[in-house]
Amino acid sequence: MRLFISVNLPASIKEEICNRITALKIELERDIRWVREENWHITLKFLGELEEKDLGRIKEIILSAANNKKQQSISFSRIAAFPAIENPRVLFVGIGDSNNILQELYRELEKHFSGDAGSYTPHLTIGRVKDKTDRRKVASILKEYRQLDFSDLEMKVNKISLMESILMRKGPLYNELFSVKLMEKSE
Image (tube, rainbow, N blue to C red; front, side, top):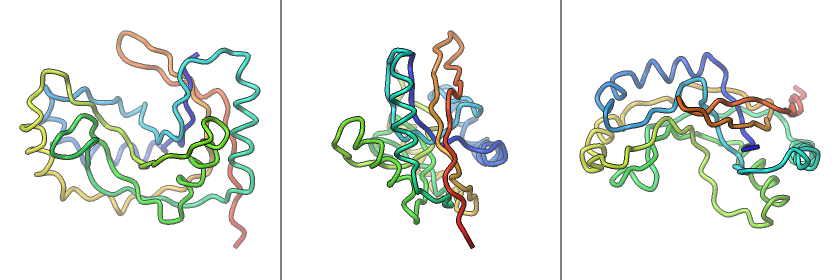
């Protein structure tokens, strides 16, 4: 089983981001493998290939990571790329995590899985640059879209999910295996 832990996005956020990047998608249609909108999520931890017998331990870790964590809002920011906008390989929408909920969840998960919580940049992957693409051309177009602002889009991180990625010919199919709700804030 190919597994990852994520925060899944509501359909309304996916739809709004999709609408705003339509022109970018048209301009870079041949250069980018676009992630299908239904697969958009914020990865907290990619686990890779594991066996079904590992699910119980993973669920316990997720429960532990979510323990006493309150629901918090995050916002989205601008189009960016890894490793850099000048040398794009992965296109993403940045995430504003002013309450550090994603960072906290990431650190808690890393404690259990690797013991070393390296750096983590919360993001929403929207596409990957194709291998034989002129990266300078993509970088130039991306720079034109840097002003595209998503900061008015907010969502509440209210649960984290264990997801299975089933690799198919037309792209991965994601299936939620388990989720844990975060505590609601007491007003």
